[in-house]
Image (cartoon, rainbow, N blue to C red):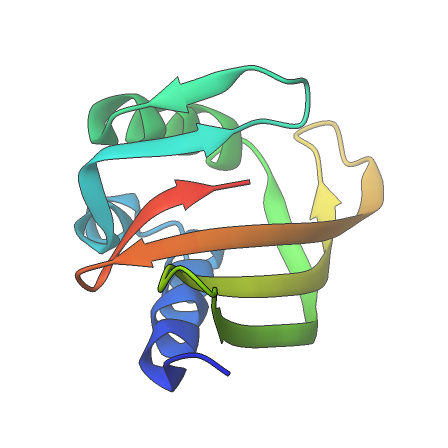
Length: 117
């Protein structure tokens, strides 16, 4: 098992995103944070990640956030990870509601998120 503080870090990130407090979210990332996106592309660096969040998430409303799994693990090589499975209802600007299911992995180094899959 991994460090339970890492679970709190990832939970805090989600709470801030759902509250659209993007200026506070970036304090949880390393300066060189990398997001590996679902389409295979990457978003690299804290400024780029913050921009993606602000432009994408500020246009939608989140409801009914549900957390299924939030588990801290330490790899055989010492890497710290949080594995997450969660779901949220997303309402577009046009009022269309979809239920999004996510399975994500966060690599933590020095108390900051350095990689998100």
